Image: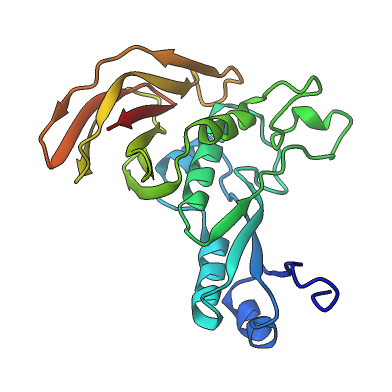
Length: 259
């Protein structure tokens, strides 16, 4: 193919661990342009998801290690990714929605990832759009699982600069070096309001007096609220700025900063 068209890009797929890549990469490492992997969740219920400390990026991490070992110039495509667990029947609900947001955030923090694909519908039954894997219904309106795509799509900046976790709180920060703007994403997995303190190291941007929140009332609820709040964010410190705020139960909060 490359002899016919040198611009064609070729990838090779793998999901079965380092043993697979150790067998394949010595053969293909100089003839492909990118590696491909898939990443799904193993979470069976809200309780299990709430209390675990995983990153849900085992396949991505293994593939990244193969790139670093055999050809650091290669890139990575994640062509299937979702909090859906194959083989289990889940509802399209709030905890799966927030978990999906978490998986997306943990995936796009890898610098090698050029392409990410959430499989937006599954053809497993007479009404596949209502399944736990669908981003939209039969009228092409967003289902709960689709809202994380909306949030990341609207607020993701050019570069992910931070990803951290503490208890039931997850956080990510993305930055645009061109205009100095930064967006902070805070996930509260708990059913209770959480008080948090976030320190922004060596960043002097000012938070806007508003924030967007994605939230639901209970883990099993299918009703998603996505709305803007007008809130003044208090900032302490100069070089290292401390942000103190409250996070609604079962929510993702987006705080925007600008220079």
